Image (tube, rainbow, N blue to C red; front, side, top):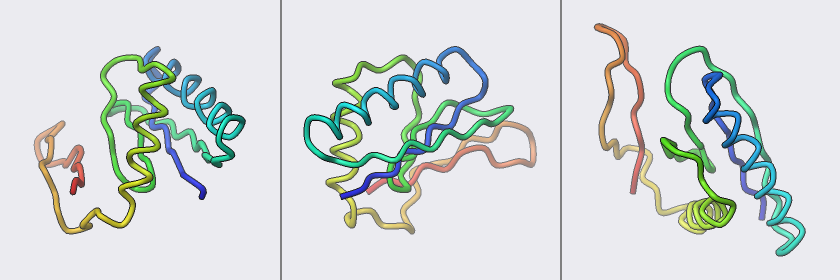
Amino acid sequence: MGIEVTVVTNGSELGEIILKSVWETARLLFKDYGIEVFVVPYQTKRGNVLLVINGVEFPVTRPLTINELSDLILTAASAQGRWDSQTVLGAEFIEEGSLGNGVVIA
């Protein structure tokens, strides 16, 4: 079972902390359980720090512990197939006329 985690950073200290924590979490999940987690760093100039786990966005507003990241990654991966790609919770407008974020949830 392979899990893809894209770490969207905006150059902030939080983004760097989350990226390092996700790398460590991926290493531990593979070492302890044999679960492959593919970490994809993505740098953006603006926007929020996000984790995109198998296509589902999770906004990050504070540093997460290794245990919290493990739980989040495993929960999101186990829910695979239950997401409806047509369901949108909301959107955030960053500037007038430009769409910021839309979060897809089940």
